[in-house]
Image (cartoon, rainbow, N blue to C red; front, side, top):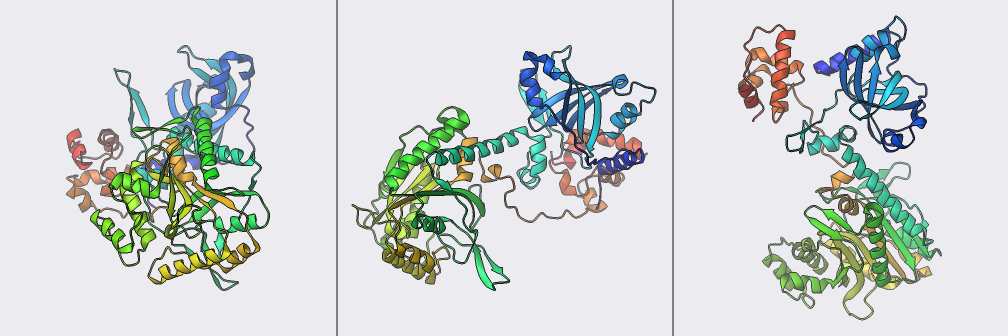
Length: 576
């Protein structure tokens, strides 16, 4: 493993600490009795409670000024300034703890525990006067340091931000350290889930767990992931939905069940799709899809209120209002509204012509349901910014849904669309076992035509229905997409701690000739490599001012007998 100069330096500090008898990774407990947020919120009102505090966190900055220094500590709640005075830390003749350990062997990113008391500096900043400190974890990699500067107009400008999406998603642990607003997003996601859990629990519905490994993939139209169970010597599938198992529980006698489920669909990735995603599915006996629409409106409105204190939520350039009631269209009404075409009585050939006339690519595997779905997605979905219910789907699109009580050829289904994407899908659930078998058989025919998302025949589920399932309303609500909206994030990757990523490419070392092709003199290549630039691609878009300044120090340190490049030359190396 090739290490940068900073990484080598930190490893040397680790060894020096151990030679001094200081464990850089101690095992004993450090008792914390306060947080940064608590101090900032409550100190001025009750100063006596903060005369003997203990706090732990990560060092994020230093200002060393001889016998006294300032630093900034970040814990899970925020940041607080620390004040270190040599004679308070080292009251005797031995000043090693301050002069050597603090000033020379600690780095930004190290985790420390401190004890002391809170005070207010002459500039009015609430701070901790440190009387004791202990190294709890030595950080061996330097953090990307995000610098914030206020310009003459009072505007805050950020430099060296850790903002590259691939780096942020791949190294989420670094993202959470240096970008506090990211931590807030995931706190809000948890609050969203808790809001739903409380809402459903207060109505007496039972939270349950159902299998993730399933012998038959069902409950949705999607391509599954498959795996193999060695002991049973059988193929299993990661569930694409938990619907059919939850319905079995309704057959078993529960009036209402719900599950926060990790589901898996072997399909493309985009800013709206991740192959592993979270949804909550709810099934309630003796209800229908009209009742479920009212419940979803009420629940999502409550989520907005719980997270934001109001029903209006900023999302990109829009303000989305979740206040009830939401707009409602039938699917055919929506398509006609945005295309001017009435597709309600069209057969497969006519639908294919309409789809192709709008630039939709079709093939022989696509039946009526797929064609209507593609047409809706292309012409309608992106226009539905405010929360809208789309109801009454063609029977071919919904193999698990009860036929409409008044409209032949349709089913009692709705989707909730918001910000141009589906966030919920719900049915009056099909409970006629013979009708359900016929629908499964239609899906098998689609599979024979090459539809990889067609449903499989589930004989055990049909057997359960034959024992009798009461009239039931069911819904699946996408947690990831709803979190995107409620936290104003543009991509699903921004609301998943660890989104699926392509394998990380190992960076090969560039040769001296590779650097020279960028116009870098050969004499400066060792300095750049010492600074951590092992590949020419790492220079692209890098901070030219920082590189220029660091080269000056390297020139002296390595005793290089080469002319100093100009700032413009360094900028040309970075592509600026």
